[in-house]
Length: 477
Image (tube, rainbow, N blue to C red; front, side, top):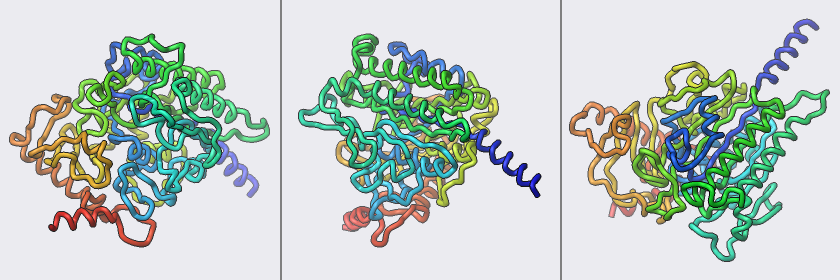
């Protein structure tokens, strides 16, 4: 009996030791074409380029088209339409119900020390705060650093440790210029503290969600980087971000954690472009569209995964993957228990770790607000006809104003036509039929702007998606 208990104890210790540290680095509004390893010629990103060379670079990696829904999808492993929200609503910037299980809760319960540094933007005013959702350490802003190109007079952005505990505020351009450095300092301190447990105690693995504010406007850049890039202030902000990430990797090596740390770098959505915000916007690379639109430029973002000796190194894959896939992947790699709820994410473990392995994801859905605007299956994308603004009652006007009308449904083959300019719907009716069927199935499961589907999450009594009922009444008239 003693021998059996010893073996079980040893096995538990082995599993705990095998749990990787997990670090998500999320840029804000960074475009697919803003990194050297993704084709940028006028912004220098040597540290992220090196990360791509040492890991796996994904060229069909998807987020969501705007900040709040994107962060909700990342944290829950669900499309935003599936996520349960407060009072059974459905909001333009997702307000997750506190009963939704977040990634940090899942990993905390599996023995991880969890921390958030940077931008939250998931409905603190509605009760959903990072500490309540599983983050034990916090240094965060409740929402964005601003919503305009330049800092507005009187605007105050608070940094908090926990709800109600403000530790500093962003009021001036000088404050904004320190954002990247401040978040990097806090992240480094979190990693150091995670590596300083007493020698008699097993060190906990850490999960750090480092959600930088840059290059979201208003832009902020420290004096060291100001005026140094060929892309103006935007390029300066990205180059400072790249240097900060280099500091993160250097610290992992210094702490002896590099070989057992899984790092994912991505962006929350595509960039604002010069048409939207002048010279403070980014580049979608070869793709059409930008932040908030249905086109690839608003959804397809850089995706780099690195874990020395585990994740495929110096490889590029066009396999489809998305931020919703990270939660189930982390569960598989850490031994954590998945949330007891229907998820949309898929486990990418084999795809990430086996050379030339295909992605398990063949289909991806594009929602703007509560409307399904497109579906991708393998190499084809079907974009549905829609009115201007997309008839999306859950999105604010500043979002819907960027969504132009589309008089007829169109089909594109993305590998040959990244600019989504050649409609193949008349030539490929069988593909149109298949993708239309996938879309119909998703509407039944997730819902659309006229009402929720059978698989949507709800936690409160009362009407479900009340605004959808209003839409139905208007349509009936």
